[in-house]
Image (cartoon, rainbow, N blue to C red; front, side, top):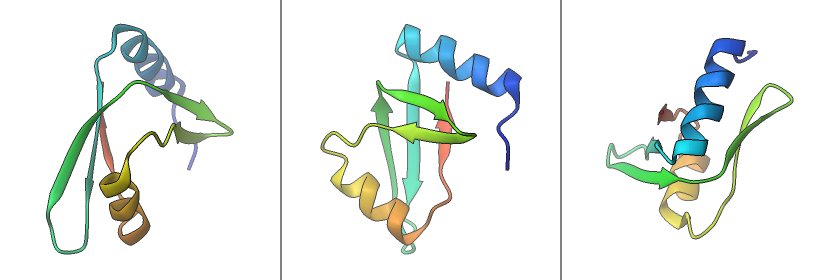
Length: 70
């Protein structure tokens, strides 16, 4: 699924302002929300730097559906 250009622009502006957060949820429905400082769109996909995102990474591996706010 291609990320719309409007969404790409919103993410780029929000990252510069430091106003992005990523929410993940494991299969046992325990949400985990973290601020994110590095996010880019690469080949139509969301690219995040994995700096100490232990719980976030575990959740994504179990349930790839995420929410990002910008």
